[in-house]
Length: 638
Image 1 (cartoon, helix red, strand yellow):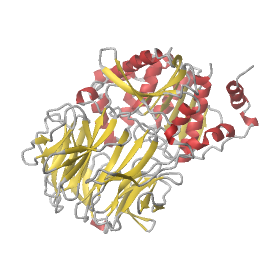
Image 2: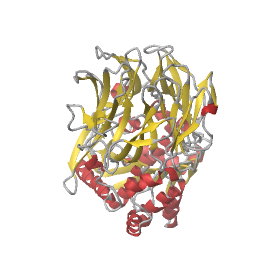
Image 3: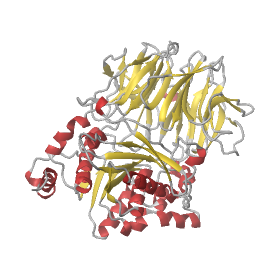
Image 4: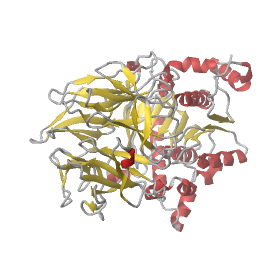
């Protein structure tokens, strides 16, 4: 007798016209893939209905909290007046909106793009209405308010579409927009203003291991380098204390990012004590300058600490769930706001009392009626790769009581590649673990951030690129030997650079994967570099290689998945945003064509109103249901 699953998919794939189907969102194009049956959507519906709340700052005028959350199709800004108070929506756009209040609380500046194209425009928001501050065409990135709340500093490509020049504007008067400094390169940004607003701190980002700090004279536009820009040093943060001291994170003299003082005149970086092994990912200075909050990344788990500036004493905040912490901001009246997400909780907003270290939860996001405490905590898996390099990742296992025996596995590879998988809330993917009994493994291959600048550089350039793919083989050997993992039922997925890794892993380990779902993925490094937006092209050449160099070009072509299509044996599902400025749609189109030219089927899902990943809930839901069908057909079937 056939199993329920086999019978169900015979119905879905062979007789879909005879059953009720989920209406496909108008902006999605489904090519070569089946429709989604109502029954499948109904079974998984609660997992689609979780929310999150990202802390976006404080309003000095009324002491409320600004958060980003979603009640419709996309994230919007909301006001919360008190802990666990009602969320009052204040932006009402069809695209996601982010924003920041002025230090006085009188003006809210927001950022918004169209269809995921990432050509962000800046606006003021008042009474639900947007007033444009930028040109409506170029890419504009919010930098910082000055400490007096008079000016906003930002970067813009409006001059030539490529270089991120530096601008200031009084948001109360859009006509005050002024180009302060012309620069070369797409990695420039204003990070903070010194007290008084006459000087700004600026960073020129070149790569994850090199960035150049400068001081900007706001009146004249003169840029003065801080330190020796010939050295390969990475800086982050750059914030002024009320007394004018410039604080930053830097890996000068270290393999990791440390927190310390940066002397603008001499360029000397003086780290604070008690830092050795882990990166300081972010920090924030209290309004009175006496306290600095900072987050250390300890093997992928964020730890929050407070430093008393006069004494240098550091206290770690205990009792927080293992996960990711972001959005630090001190309120002028004392508390530190931040967002926290963990395996058992979507992102929510919190406040910390610096005196007592007491944490107060301000939002408690809905999870579709499901108990988030039922979600499994991940376990850290560490292995030695082909060359002895230690690599690690996080494994989420299904409940063995509910799903006994060997379970199928999905390897989910992060993008970046200068990124890192940390423990967190898996959202829709919790359905795969809790209801389908699929284990999910998130590797941090070489080239991932969070493990020091030596490790993050191990995959740089075309000649080292496939070393990260070889890391996947070490994980597969380890996981296949796990008595609770079915080594004969493994699949791979990933997005962006993780999408390249998805293709490359399906090639290098063709006999081990039953399916590959590759999202906004690089298929040919040469065409990717030639077609990615010009403002980011040079930044990506530092990581992947320079296609203009004949030797590097030849190697980039050699390792590109598009050149190795015959080696892919696993069924493919490809997802792409039509407006993606990073990995253009042509990268997906060309590999779909190449696979089909060989007579092989491939599922292809395109979001015409999406960019580098789907951001709209209706599209995300349909993508997940299609993904679930793909895994049930190719991974769960025995």
